[in-house]
Amino acid sequence: MVSRFAPPEVLGTMRLASFLPLASLLLVPAALVGACNAHVAQVLSSDDGGSGGTRTTTCTSDPECNADVTISTLFGACTAGSCVCHTNSVVAANGKCGAPGTSPDAGPNLPIPACEDKGGICTSVELPDPPGRRRARAGEAACADPRSTCWLASGGMAPVCYNAQGCNGNNAISAQMGDCNYGICFCRDGFTVQTDGRCNVAPPPDCPAQQGTCRNNNCMAAELVSANATNLSCGDLVEAFCCNAKSTCTGGAQEAAGAGWVPVELECCSRKSGNTPTICVNGWQTCPSGTAPVRKGSTCG
Image (cartoon, rainbow, N blue to C red; front, side, top):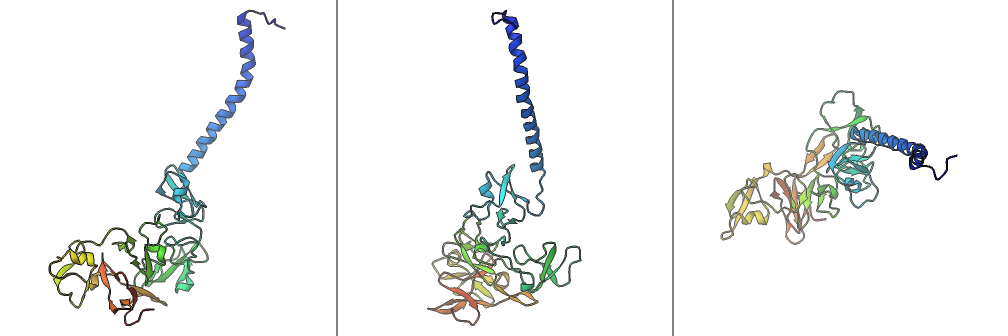
């Protein structure tokens, strides 16, 4: 036994000898933790997502990866500045993550229609494309077997929307900006249909920007008038209209069994003034405030 009154160099040696076992216990776990963290980082950085872990839009926190910000359940994670959707989560139209089994353009918990209900057929992904058909858009229709592809009739147009939420030009906003009728968006007051067919806050463009033609008194038979704000860009001293060739303004359509989406002639219905032709804004047929879209010749519902 060494006396507690031993010389300082002896006491120092004793302290070092007693410290080394404790230090080894502390240093080894730290090394293991560092290696583990490095492995986790490598796994996360190489994650390509598989069926559900698709790396999408940029983010700074996990809640930002939810397509519907009103839902507290997280459908993805913010990893290395990008959203990685969980397995089975849906990658929404804005690149964020939606609830499993929902449409990318839809609000929460809206089931995707069955392929057969849309007049489609399901085939193995290894088979060649069937003639006269097109792949269903995300959220448009789905097969019971996730390994199969849904093929819809290629005739007609592909709809812009399937529900009101699909008309929101900004998917981060839960309030509805428009209504979906006949596969196209009809924007609510305060919003305008944009060039992509969805609604947002940007006002109607001037007539030249919309590639319209300013005419006095009225438009020609094969033309559609534009929104009031666009008409005013043609001058306000003498009544003038911004006229657009009807063939350049995309209108509504309706599903027909085996034929896809078939164009439908629409009018704008008002209980006070009856039916009037649709107007053209940013290349889309729409209806002015206070009117509703109906099939040509129909009355307001």
